[in-house]
Image (cartoon, rainbow, N blue to C red; front, top):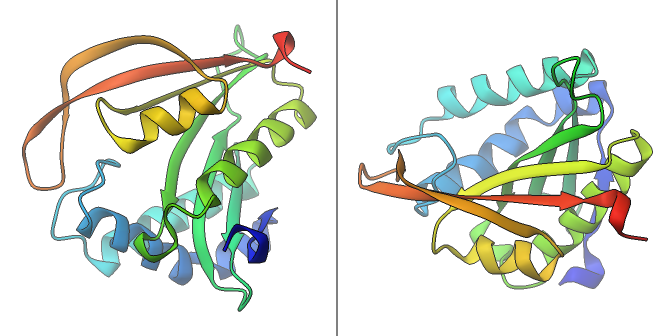
Length: 179
């Protein structure tokens, strides 16, 4: 599947046009149990409201939005790079909302998205990236394989979509130390 997947950065207009398709991916992930800031049941209204806000951030230049599309040009994954940082942190960005539709998982989509986010970050002049993920989840292995360093864990940081507390693990990646 990864060979038939294209990863690209959306323009502000494309981000606005893709709200519905991105909402489908978000709903699938939350309904599948992903802890990505939303609780079950995940409604279309919540999902489209979130993606409209993201599209507005893309239009303001505050974030980069990447999508993975299958051979039918259907969005099967997405990740964001939050570029808007405080003035004393112009060198860094945060990776947010790495989402892959359940039917497209374990096929290299997330890995391709992470490779692309590194390239986008470098192109934006960022040398340090940070992210957080559910402790003990599949994403921890993905980030470690992609060269991210574990900084630590915060117990009982958030709720899973079903209301159960979960910890979060903080990762960072120093792009200046890598080719």
